[in-house]
Structure formats: C-alpha cells, structure tokens
Amino acid sequence: MSVRQVLRMGAPGLLEVSSSVTEFDSDALHQLVADMFDTMASYSGAGLAAPQIGVNQRVVIFGVEKNPRYPDIEEVPTTVLINPEIEFLSDETELGWEGCLSVPGMRGAVERCTHIRYRGYDEYGREIDRQVKGFHARVVQHEVDHLDGILYPMRIDDMSLFGFEKELFAESEQDQES
Image (cartoon, rainbow, N blue to C red; front, side, top):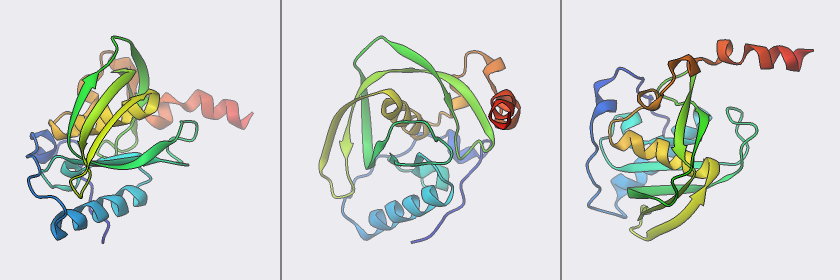
C-alpha cells in the first residue's frame, strides 16, 4: 500500500474515458483500492477516481466522516464502487461548491442532481445498489465524472463562481477572525 501522485488538471489521462473492470477480487485490484484509500487519506479527500492516480479503470472510492476540507458536510459511507452507473431520480438540482484533488486550491459552484440511484460492484464483485441525496449524491456524480474524462470545472456554468479558495472565501475567513 502506498500514496500515489495525484494527476492535476492538464494531464491528458484525466480526459480519457476509463475502461471497465473485468476481473474482480484480484491482487491487482485490491492493491489499487488500498493505494487509492492511502492516497485519498493523505490528501484529505472525500473521494478519488482511479484515473486521478493514472489508472484508466472504472474504479472510484469515497467516504467522509470528519474531513478538514469539508468541515460542515454530512457523513458519506466509505465505499468502493466499480463500473458505476448513475440514474437521476429527480429533476431537482442544487448549486454547490466542489473541490478536487486534481484541481488543488480551487473551488467552483456546480449544479448537480440532488437525488440519484447508483449501481455497481465492490472489489469482490458484490453488487451495490443505493439511492442517495445531498452531498452523498454530489460526491458520487463528481467521482463518476472522472471516469468519463470530465473534471468539475467543465460543469461550471458561471465562471465568476470558480477560483482559488483563499480569494473566494476570504470574507468568511475574516468573519471567523472577528
């Protein structure tokens, strides 16, 4: 198990569509998942997709308990999701701030569906089928986008809501210091 380098926006591998996993419960897949969890923890991420560490496979992980990058969000169960499919269960969307380990130091407001169903498999080939809302739904959509070569800035409609965290949230930091 090891922490891998996270590719940053501009790396060609982040723009590719990932290949489906065909072999479950293999040593290679378990090693990949372990490395992804080590990497996500090292960077204090809420999720990570295999392409972010240079592996072109349809594998994502996510999970949030207490996270310094997202101090006020609800918990999301720790999950390994392979070959995911998303179904939108509502037309309702919500604009929310997103960050990404591949776009360090920046945030952008992205419109996402608030209620989804996702299906896929864990690393052992067991089926996963969940209906989720809120931040959980946002994290899944963000990570699955990586598998299709989409980074969250590509989903931003209003570029005035995209920038460096320190500049975007300078006022709220000053309010906390007062």
